[in-house]
Amino acid sequence: MPQQRKPNDLSRSLTALDMDTTLIAVVELSLSSWLVAGIVPGVERQPLKKLKTDESALLALLNRWRDEAVRSGYKILRIAVAFEAGRDGFWLARWLNARGIEAHVIHASSVAVSREHRRAKTDRLDTEHLKRAFVGWLRGERDHCKMAAIPSFREEDAKRPSRERESLVGEQSRLVNRMKATLIRLGIRGFNPKLRHAEQQLEALRTPEGEPIPPNTLAELKRDMQCRRFICDQIRSIEQERLERLERTPDTKPHAMVRLLARVTGIGIETADLLVHELLLRNMRDRRAVARYGGLTGSPDRSGATSREKGMARSGNARVRRGMVQLAWRFLLFQKDSALAQWYRQRTEKAPKARKTMIVALARKLLIALWRLVREGVIPEGVVMRPA
Image (cartoon, rainbow, N blue to C red; front, top):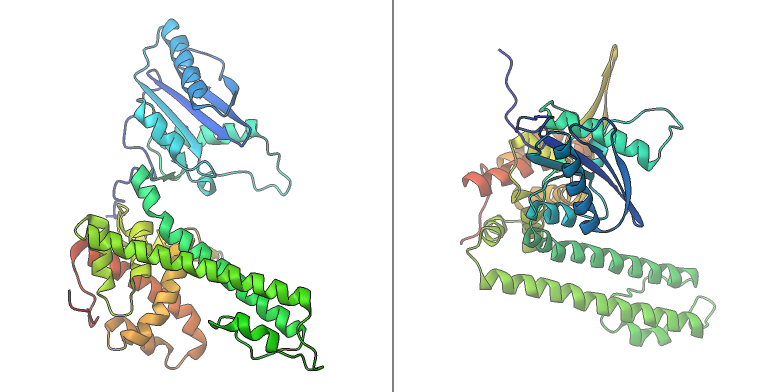
């Protein structure tokens, strides 16, 4: 007997759809305007209305369409609205839910579109695609589209420190690379611009021609070093505030998860905070959903006699994927006697070229093991834990 897929309200709706009592609307969001398309019971035409970027105007339009359905003899018991995930985030969905409107956010990549090389793309056509996908989802049919979980205001804000730190670290690396490139352009090698007193040592540097650093270039390097110091101060401030929050409320669910993960040797507070707020707090269906959201699943290409792997699907959370691949390499250093590290070594001992491929498999297994650790309290076999 085939295995039944567990219920999942993000891949299909679990509420029965009655087209005679449900008003369905989709919104194509843009920076300057919103295009709203609807399916109104009792109204033959399928209305299409362009609005200013105003949530009150959207609510008024939905109420107007509901009144039209009532005048046609149909009582509206449910209003379902959907729009694609994007720059506007989730605030509109939360705003509509608070006013009794059932709001959903569609993963843009899950909506099927034409594969023509130069297909027509307009907001009107996009609303038609969204309507077809959304109605199929509401009927409970699988794989029409997938919905994003709508985070609360607090959950969304809790992700900001980790994401800001990641952005600042990237900006710091960009500045360091630029300073090194500037020095190499002058023929100066071996100088570390990250040293504490690097700015004071710039004037003593000499090019291979015996010349000091030109004044404009010297001023540019000093400004870059000042910017880097400022960014380092911001990173330290973020890390210090995170530690203070953990000490202030250690028993809340997110902080308890962070403290538990940080007990695993090789995992620091930054990695634990990233995993908890980006993935582990979410209500995942099973281990496959965990690996898929982490973007650590494969993308097979099998058709007829063709059978090959195209690499990682990269369809999940890019931050989790990068963090887990880095953590997998660290895990091999700090947890050498664990079952996962031994599994990796057995499969790469005689095939060194497979190390990069197998590190992704290790990252996937490790992510599932950490998910089980915070969810069920199961410590991975052979993993060394720090004392509580």
